[in-house]
Length: 468
Image: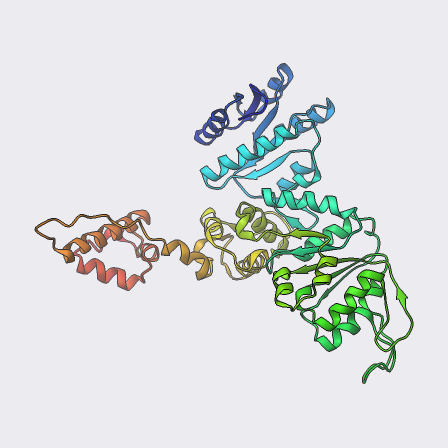
């Protein structure tokens, strides 16, 4: 599938089963010549004696210097081949380190099949950009946003493009996806970056107060208005105003916002003076605004004024490959200890549970769970036993494929048949846990007492493993 036949790919990985799988997967794509070396001094020797079109490098602490030298060599001699760094352990610090030095991508390996697909997809993308231009949008972070998945890279590129265009933007996405972070990134990359970024949640302020919050009021405008108040639009003059939950705004205020977008002027509540400000409006909603327009709860003309450039923030379930990086990022941010040794770790099994969960609350839910686990988990490592039931339960609730049995003409003893199945599954659970009955019971969705009763009833050896 490579667009340039016989492009040479240098695979710098340990020559173990994983490394062999990576080299084989790339080779099977077709059109690639694979040079497979250990990630040591041999890497630069290959680069010096032959042309390569891309490098896939396995990041290990003991081999990091080689990758740094490779990136420096490419920079020094102005070479254009992209470098894709892969790692078995999630680390936002190492991802940031290598991406800042020019790596095309930093991929975290999860399940084998998913990992190989990520490597292939990233390699194809890298080769399409093999003119040596590496966009900032390829980073696993973007301002305060974390993610290196294809949907997030697409989002980063869109933010880059619209930041310089001084137009109104409508950000859509489910609750907890990070819409305000996107708005902040747009502001910080715009020509307004040195002016204020002023957020306001239109759904959190009562309707009778929202107009005053947005446009301000004059002294004596209403009961309790003991002094003149400057509104958010005036505070944002020269900068950007972020109108979150715009879909919650009532129709009477929608009219006034529409007028502002048309004329860039307004009057304070109770005031006669027309005030003109230079403000970029960025709105956000977790609602379907077009549906609200059709239902008559949101003005169609205001919708079109806001929706000049639409940006959609993907839900976490559509970019699950970002979960390990996000977990590492939140562990780093919220751990009480700032040094690497004092930070909590998370087990691969726990990460697997994170990957299987649907995350209806998106990134916000993930961050809150990580914060809770840091506080409540005992020991240095967060394990599956520490996870809330909703994360661990899906794994337990997965049922094996139904047994397809044909009923013989003479019939069967159904009770004995089901007992044999039950006995087999209990034995498998005990084998998987080395005879530890507490853990075997968890795998079967039972408590320990029920498991022991079933073992007694089925005539199984209660001394298996000799462990509780």
